[in-house]
Amino acid sequence: MNTVDTMNTEDTSGTVDIVLAGARGHGRWHLENIRRLQDKGIVRLAGICELTPLTGDEIPEGLGTPEQSADFGALLDSTGARIAVICTPIPTHTDLALEAARRGVHILLEKPPAPSYAEFRRMADGVAAAGVACQIGFQSLGSHAVPAIRELVEEGAIGEVTGIGGAGAWARAEAYYRRAPWAGKRRMNGVDVIDGVLTNPLAHAVATALALNGTTRAEDVTRIETELQRANDIESDDTSCVRLTTANGIPVVVAATLCAEDPDEPYVVAHGSHGRITYWYKQDRVLLQRAGHGPEEYEYGRTDLLENLVDHVTDGDELLVVPEVTGAFMKVVEAIRLAPDPTPLPATAWHLLPDEERRVVPGIDGLVAAAADNLALYSELGADWARPHVANEVST
Image (cartoon, rainbow, N blue to C red; front, top):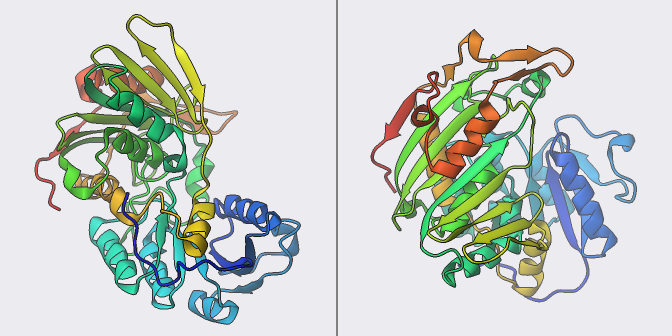
């Protein structure tokens, strides 16, 4: 992968000061990860940007008392941080990334990088012009399993690749959509949000499928078909699938739901003429099944994306997930943004589990798996509630 040239790639000694923007919600994971790296002596949490300051109990032990402010730019200035981790609402990503870039601060930007392709390009072009490094937070792409699978495919382990499928059968309680004002929204106050199942909670399934296919850049996607549905009382989609036509001729289909009957680990599967490779990307676990051989299972390590960014800034290591290799994913976000609003599932297609306060779509687990196995959309698998939409032209 090509990396963005940066202003500060010289070898330096000591720790790298970091500011975290967005320390609640998923930001708590970043706090713990920063503490892990701080314990290793390679970073220091210099500041936290939140509208309401964190209490002492909310800051993990060992991180000290970082400076706190609701003013991101002022916090970057006062701390002199070299890296900013941005884990804020989706519509704020571009402006905050550019604010950091203008100050020469390198960036780890949570996924999805932006709510529209235009905002993504504004961000990516802006950080490139500023000469700072930007890593997009698709943690699954830091897994050592990804290049290992690509190598197996190139060696012909499963014959000719016929398609890539992705499946995510997850569950989220109704409270999930009350966690923040933007949760489950397509737009808010006239601004794009696009917080759908394929663009946010299971975005890794899409990005990882594209990575295994070697079609990560915007120009690698030529046609997109979407089927967007919702069982929950939200604007965005919670039960959806997408099929991509790619420049290399290999189709990519990803199906996902947050209304699973029995939630399970999401996975991506590479189909070949003589076998298949299944990758459970949250576990870094790979299963190789091929003609004439018994099943072979492997587990891989993973390079943390923040640690990789620090190593890039201090030692010039190659970045793993630069903005350009998320261009194809952003084309999917754009297709979902431009598609008709998700179809509400009929009341007969879902029911509420009172004990868990979540909505379940009976049969959806099998439908998600069948979509990944057959490279087919829900409507093609007999789901009478599915509404297909085709974006015939994907501009780059």
